[in-house]
Length: 208
Length: 402
Image (cartoon, rainbow over all chains, first blue to last red; front, top):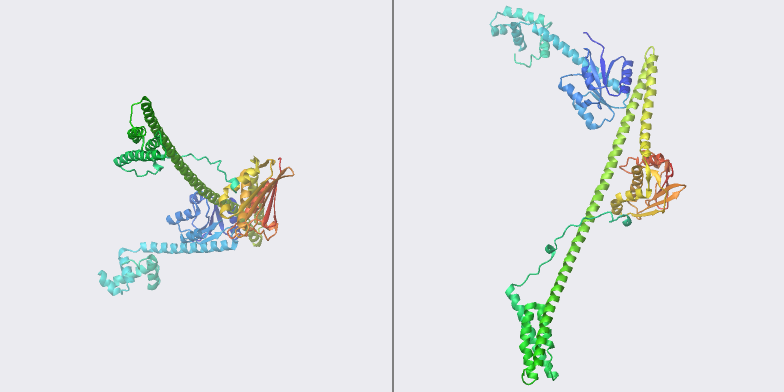
């Protein structure tokens, strides 16, 4: 795991808020980057690290809610925490429905914000870890030969080597060799683990 | 209130009314029947004259009087027109001849008689013509009178309509000004709230950060010091917002001019005239003549009086006696205005009354009187409140000069 330090992005047009939030977050050991607008944030190249955005609802140009929609639409999974000077209920409902993790009204308790950021970072870390594992599995799966993939698909349906051999028109010993290769390449120590990996790759739902 | 409600300023452009359309037309009998009636009347008149003359002959001996015939001819001309008049005159001629013959025993040609008869005929004709002419002019007069009457009625309707429209307009204007007032106050409050909330958030965050920097092991004094500096900076920013709001009001005051305050009061009363009448409030305005003009911001002072009047009106909503008294007099070179209602007065201290966000109304924001006092003080004046005989009594003083 090449785990980097988490980064919090603060997007607020008020420099005093950016500055003081940055100080608060740094005091608990978080790395912080501040941006005055959504456009500024988008122009920034983000390092590969767990992160979240602390986003002001009232932003110049593209407003906070609109920016959140833009992120969702472009498939950016970064968690969003809203801070707002005038949080009305319909606005917060809209934000949460659109996937925001938290909606805090200014002035907020520091602990509330830190808790929300912690939850957001945890969620992003978990998402990134899941994505990393899935990615590794996908790479392992790529190394399987077409024959081995065929054997794997039949294994997942619960068939024995003999049955598989009959199905693909090969000898039982050949199937056993394929099966061992599959286990080795996928780095699975048991059949149960192999099935779990296949589930992670989405092979179980797709027809073999 | 009526004294303020003037029609003078209202100059209605009179519409052109087509009189002929407004006049009722009596159903006229058909032409031949009418003709028959008119000439029949002539015959009847002459016959009646004949009878009367006969009767007169019985009573008085001597030369017959042709006066009844004359009356008959005139009556025919009056009621029937010129045609029946001539007809009656022609019919009367042989009758006259007859009477002369009877009275004189026999008809003899005498120049005297002939002239007399000719004169009679001429007089009768002239009488008839005159009568017809009189009738026509009198008819024309009656027609004119009716035309005038309907024009008058139309005009009266028009005025009623106009008064109604005027009332509706005033009602709408009052509604609008109230809505505008609320919107403006709401927007202003929201803006101020946001402007204050931002530095407040920064201050709270800095304070937390400062404490956390001090809690780290070892304490990070540089960061803590910086956070403390941020707190100082952001409190200054919050204070700036407050002084900017104050300056906003002062700036408006600098555009003040010498306006008659009585004129302002009159304008405000007129704008809420509809509400005052709807709530059955008697308004008594006592203004001392020859008041000194004082430099004021017209719109702001309108706001002050509007607020005081509206408060008074709401205070008197359930009072038996509803009377709003406005007195104005010169005082120490400036102006003193007293607004008093009969709504029972207030039960809290005067200071609480002017406190921002203090309100006794279910939907009030509690900013009205606070803003009023700020405005009056921006005019270097004073606004105070006390309980009068029957209700609240507000005293407003604005110094002269400046």
